[in-house]
Length: 381
Image (cartoon, rainbow, N blue to C red; front, side):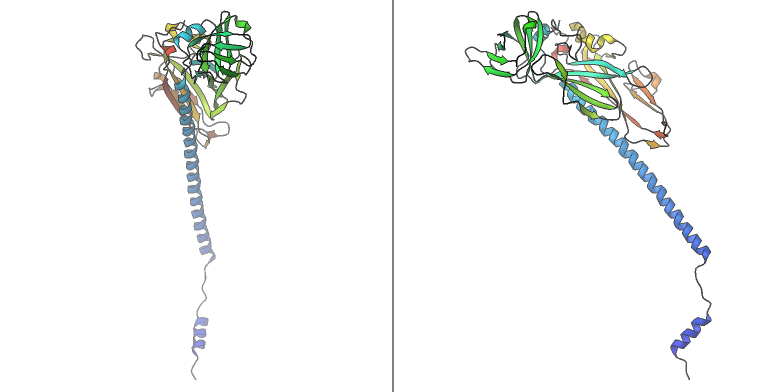
């Protein structure tokens, strides 16, 4: 009797030794898997670290370039529409103070001025800078106009160009005063006059009013560093008074992680029409804002440009980055020891107290000043 096929297969399989995966083979497989996972983790971690560093440095570059863009716009506008030689000659004789900012600011609208702004934290006795910028969008060329004060309003011998909220510099035989236009009533073409309401401002302190200079929408700004934030702060004329104060709406932040801001005048000391010397107010305080407004026309005419530099730190630190970074501004030479006078050389030590290191970027540029006040032939005196 023949065996069925099923029984033959069962008999054959039962006669063979059962086989399987041993414990050693399982352990080897697990070890290989763990090594592969560890390698993936290391590659991912390094890739993520590289990505963060690239993004962080990129953000620092964006912050620096954006700051340079905004500041170039501000500085290149300096002096626009704020002064003619004729107006300067009058306003030069009636400053309200000895500086360009604050309640006691001079009325002389100096286009650009630089001051020290406190220690930069480098330990080398250097100071950050703050830069004052003045410009206007006056609808009239800022020439002195004959005027008189009737006790309430100004009557000006010019029928056009005045607008509410414009700033006027009123010149009397006993001084000068800044006022804000509250309202305008145009006279007849035959009279050629405009009546300007001042919102109750008293001009009796400057004697008999003689002339007015229309400054239009006067913009007075201060570019400075507060903490690590570069900001632009506006000074505005308080309505109904003659006092300039910081804009109650606050300052405009430009960029964060800015570790240094430095500015210098570019002077033409030989009358060649080009910059021959870079002047730092840290080494000669007579070029600070309070000194600039008292300098002679020939000295003011030497100023041809403003040079400034920024040091920007990356947004994110790097672990195990223990290399100190030396950042140079205004120094075209590679060895720091060869840097010319006025150069900024700062060394940032890595890592910090938490074992973190930072990368830094430096930005610098030169902005020419194009205004008649800086001309060697200026009548400013």
